[in-house]
Image 1 (tube, helix red, strand yellow):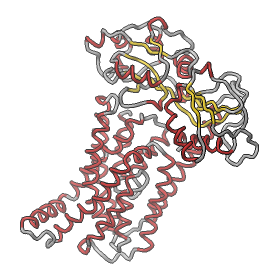
Image 2 (cartoon, helix red, strand yellow; image 1 turned 45 degrees about the vertical axis):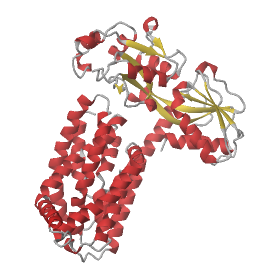
Image 3 (cartoon, one colour; image 1 turned 45 degrees about the horizontal axis):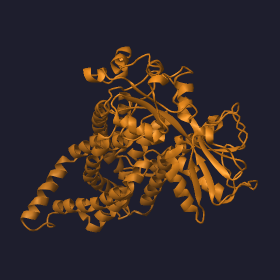
Image 4 (cartoon, one colour; image 1 turned 120 degrees about the vertical axis):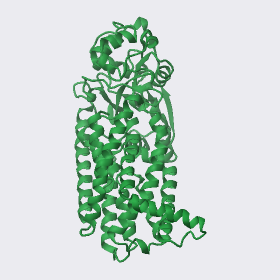
Amino acid sequence: MTLIQSIILGIVQGLTEFLPISSSAHLVLIPNLLGWQIPEAQVFPFGVLVQMGTIIAVILYFWSDLWKIIKAFFKGLVDRKPFEDPNARLGWFLILATIPAVLSGMLLKSKVEAAFNDASATAYFLFGTAALLVLAETISKRTRNLMSMTWFDALWMGLFQAISIFPGISRSGSTIAGGMTRNMDRPSAARFSFLMSIPVMIGAGVVSISDVLKVPDLSSFLPKIIVGIIVALLVGYLSIHWLLGFLTKRSFYWFALYCVLFGALVLIIGSVRSNAQAAIATPAAETAVGQSTLDASSVTGTLDQNPLTVSYTAALEWLTPAMSTCAQTIGNFSIITHGLPVDQLETTGDAVILRWGAPENLTSYSAVLGTDRLALIVNPANPLSQLTPELTQKIASAAITTWGEAAANCPDCFASAPDGNFSALTTALNFYPGQEEPQQLFMKKVMAGQPVAAASALLIPGGRQMLDIVAGDPAAFGFIPAHLLTGNVKEVPLNGIDPASLQAPILAITSAEPTGKTRDWLLCLQKVLNP
């Protein structure tokens, strides 16, 4: 993530956190629409922590109300009359409204993080926000204010807040809609919505600190988070003031229309991009693919084996859990898997081959299940922050032998100057056997055909071993399929090369078109790879 991207996303957060159009959706979709390649490890922590700016904004804006609530709350406890003062009751209502969101956040954290990397799902959730806003405007009588609030109103709005943890479901939109379905007027529902956001967003920020600490190259990422928070604070304060004035006279229908149009735009652009990628994923000059995507309605398939023999390369070992899960979901279907070197793969009459990228002179039936990209990695202790093709080629060909030489060759490639101990370390090269897909892609797109320094390199059989070696050696340098990335290593962006050129299709190759449960299993894998 760059500083400019952080500023833009801070503005987006400040504008959309309190407007009922889902700030989390915009933090997911704006980078997607602009084609930004933000590392997945940074997306979710930034999206949660940048909310700290809007938390401060809402605290500052409602400080007078908050102070009255806090004083009345503790005075009620001391006087043993906790519910007598209306402001004290509001304090209890805020606690009650927070409980559903806390529970849903604890139970659904992994699913929410996955949704932050899924533009299509976020777009559909925006349609849900639009539906909630229309429903609230349609059925609400808007006859009650904040002082008439009951414990059930608070719990009800808390339940609406619980579903808003998914990007695309607006927190303010859903909670205000929840209040309006209890016949609260718009400004009162909005006021309580903003107040109840404070404990939830603070809690989410605290929980996400552990995720931030796992982000590769944290020292260079943290200042960008801080800038985003400051921008979100300033813009968020102005957004609160504007929205409260707007809601005294206007309805939510315009916001609902915006959510529908924005969600539709994202789906249309995503569909166009998907079709374009499918068209270029497997070059026609290299392959004779029978079909680029699986057709669930086809009646011409003949390959249906149970149990099904599946051979896959080391580049796709990360896909094995999904292979097993998909087999279990079909029912009465089993697979026999074999991880094999690329040169031992052989198309037979009753087997499926899964590999990353098309082999030369492919004439069998094949289908594109998805794509993956090549990720260049170093140990988190390495201050390397970016690479150029020239520096990468010099490291891989042993024209540069120490990390000190690398820093001298490209000072801008390092977040900070390496210390004396690190500078003296030999660049620990790690490669795969020449026929394996990551090695082929690295040689063709990064090395541009130049030889690697095989004499000083360590030969690695697969991506998981590469991951472990780089994670355990501060001087190590390697590359893996991006699906294997974890917080134990640091991905280093490669400037000067089109990111699309480092992508390759994940192919299912068979002797004939699959049908029956074999096709169902492949369709399940395709859905996993394209959620």
